[in-house]
Image 1 (cartoon, chains in turn blue, brown):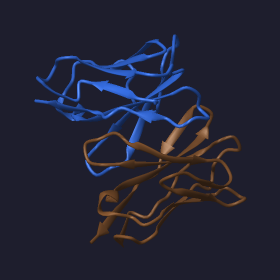
Image 2 (cartoon, chains in turn cyan, orange):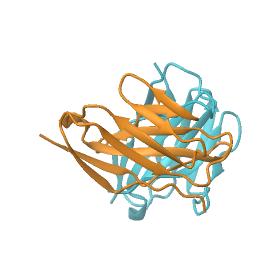
Image 3 (cartoon, helix red, strand yellow):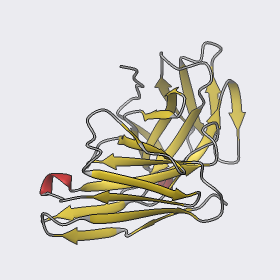
Image 4 (cartoon, one colour):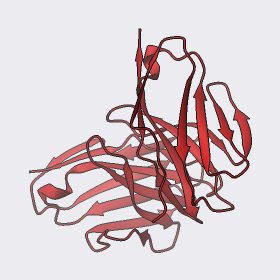
Length: 115
Length: 109
């Protein structure tokens, strides 16, 4: 149980395009979802926290207009990287939880490469 | 800024017990401590979660002292497939979680 699916797993696109990443909790309802970014050989950095039906809370230094997060249902959150540039290339990982006192369950990540 | 600290790397041999410690001096009263395992190009996988004292499941044990300013993940009898990066995750504010820097465990035959 507690499976989180992330799609796509890998995407390459040209600079200036927008990319949408989906995160789905397959067998539970996620009241809270988190989006992380991970550079090679580094730890996960929290980008934003989203609760179903509410606006996402972004961490300091994360541009909310560039990284659009939508949590429209209890099983789906999306991250859209708008007007992506090479410096946005990274490994993006989502997680979901029923309650903040319970463990977060992670998707397998999306490798984003901007040319 | 609240911070968690872990050793950068550890080496072990197959069959040994491995203990990885995470320091989290600013942990909040209601926060839990969770440990994850991550392989390259994959998302972290849940290992164990605890609040106080000792928690044990089928793969690991978690030891948390009374002051909760640190925690120790114990992996019994590691194998080569346990080579991975291990993270402790601690919540410093309600609904906010921060990962430690991760410990690269290298299990040798």
